[in-house]
Length: 265
Image (cartoon, rainbow, N blue to C red; front, top):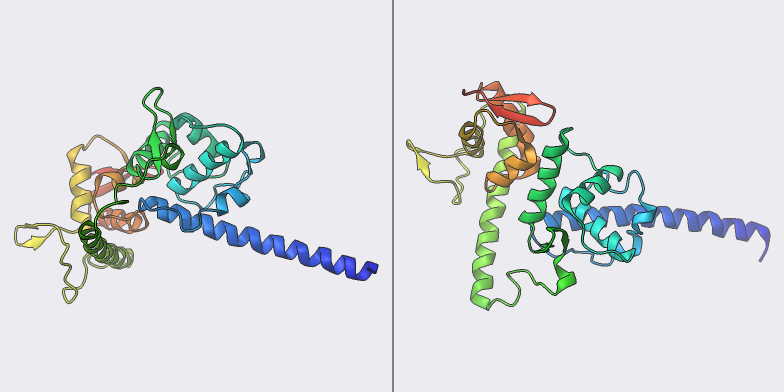
């Protein structure tokens, strides 16, 4: 093999590795979104192929990922390094070192966000009873609650999932309308069968539920992760638009970077 051919092979091999890294990053993002929904990863092999060990943690390892996806990848890296479960403090420190962008600079609030995400995704993460550390549920042979259910239960879950999809669509539309400064509501021509119970003759919107949460403890400053965890059927991607709409209407106020509270005292 002549020198020119060797150089061409090296250049092309570098391009292939670069494309593979880009593809694996996208797969990890998809896996993180699956984890947020309590589902098994769509690409289960990607972490072991490119996750590496905790000794090779990059400063951008978790940048751009979801919180649940980054935590899952970190635990898989620990497993690959011969380690096991980790505490909330260890997971927080690793994610911060790996470039995960927490929405608050307050360490206690950020750790609480990690804790909420781990508990919410019990189909993915398992809390150990002895020291409160977290591992991946599949390490201990724990299956998701929907596995092994009968066909009737599966049909019911399918109906619930369709309803949730409609709620997500409504929240995205609401967030888009709120960001333009117009009324924070979905068009009347698109009714949502999964809307909240009626109050005073109209359906309760996602903004109403967030306003109610903030007002439930007016002195508390809430992170977006806490709001997502406490307000059902509201996606994190739509929280910013909803909060800004409430702020413009005088129903919420910014209490610092990434923190929100009620205007009521």
